[in-house]
Amino acid sequence: MTFALSEYHQQKKEEFRRFAAAELDSGSEFPWTNLNRAAAKGYMGLPLPKEWGGGGEDFLTYILLIEAVSAVCASTGVIMAVHTSVGTYPLFLYGRDEQKKRYLEKLARGEMLGAFALTETGAGSDAAAITTTATRVKGGYRINGCKIFITGGGEADLYTVFALVSPPGGRRAMAVFLVEKGAPGLEVSPPERKMGLNRSATTALYFNDLFVPEENRLGEEGAGFGIAMSLLDGGRIGIAAQGLGLAGACLDYTAALLKKRIEADIEVGQGSLFTLADLSARKQAAALLTYRAAVVKGCGRRCTGQASMAKLFSTDLAVEAAARCLDLAGLEGMSDNNPLARYFRDAKVTQIYEGSNQIQRIVIARELHGG
Ligand SMILES: Cc1cc2nc3c(=O)[nH]c(=O)nc-3n(C[C@H](O)[C@H](O)[C@H](O)COP(=O)(O)OP(=O)(O)OC[C@H]3O[C@@H](n4cnc5c(N)ncnc54)[C@H](O)[C@@H]3O)c2cc1C
Image (cartoon, rainbow, N blue to C red; front, side):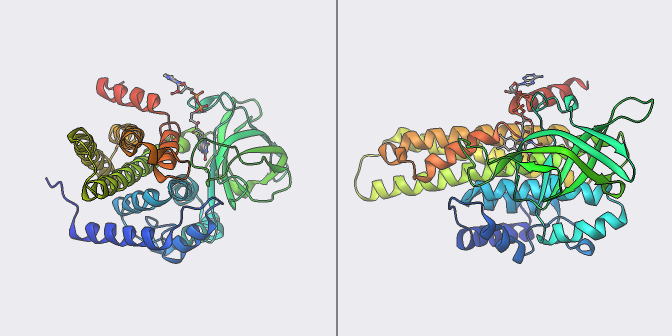
């Protein structure tokens, strides 16, 4: 049993930290510059096999990347995490060879940006309640309905869209469709004005009789719900890494601030140092939970409970760290352009998506009693 990152993972962590610090910015527009820089380094498909344009790295290495990126720009972090874990992986896991040839390599190289369209009004936590339909027509399907809060909406090149198919005489069955940007019948709303993660465009998608050819159905009719659920563990570990990155950014900023105050002979108070000590200890715990879940997933073993614990603990910690560090910063933290204010707003959002933290508690409780 070992609790330390291997020398290789330690080097990768340092490489990603240097990349994020030197090459990423935390501006205000959709972070194409950051994404293009990540693509140039081969970071947009890090855990995908090399034969499909990926980096051939293990899942833990990918998690270290999301942590490092999120510490500088959590919006870029979530776009990369969504692109990889739920925008690209479904093609790798369920795509037919011709679908992989058409899309997977470009996604893994970062030449296309992937997005994931499942959530609807009334179908967030309860994904089975979606009402978007895909009606069979000659040569394919016509999709009608509306998705909301889609990360990368309007920017992404390829959407993985979940809809209900009604086979003649059969029960409605969820299926997955690959929809390209600009497809006739696809309308995108203006980005939501959110409290945080503001650089990550989040939009509604409207499907108005949108035609999808048969060859763009991913997996079988009826396989949609299983596909969505199979992606959750990986997605949740990615968001845990995002929380970890944000918590680390709060701690680093505040430790430097207190050091400056101490050097200037300004009273800091032992209480402030104890707060940082408590948060640092909990950050270690969050890292252990997150890395453990990533290692278990990387081995191909079931990691549902571990992924939920990591997501719950890390994202709750990110909010707590941001709130406590804002307390310690005092007036300095109140300015809208102080990074702590941004970390706080960004962190709050991570408790909600990829399964809210209440849903993580349900998953963990279920794992406890085996239900
Ligand atoms: C910034 C952002 C980006 C997103 N990106 C995407 C994306 O790219 N693709 C996509 O498909 N979706 C995306 N989402 C949607 C996200 O997955 C949903 O917001 C999430 O699943 C929660 O759904 P909801 O908001 O409808 O909340 P609801 O399901 O309505 O839940 C509301 C509250 O009730 C609680 N609750 C619900 N059910 C239960 C229960 N059974 N027991 C206890 N408590 C419960 C929840 O925890 C929550 O606190 C994004 C959301 C955000 C905020």
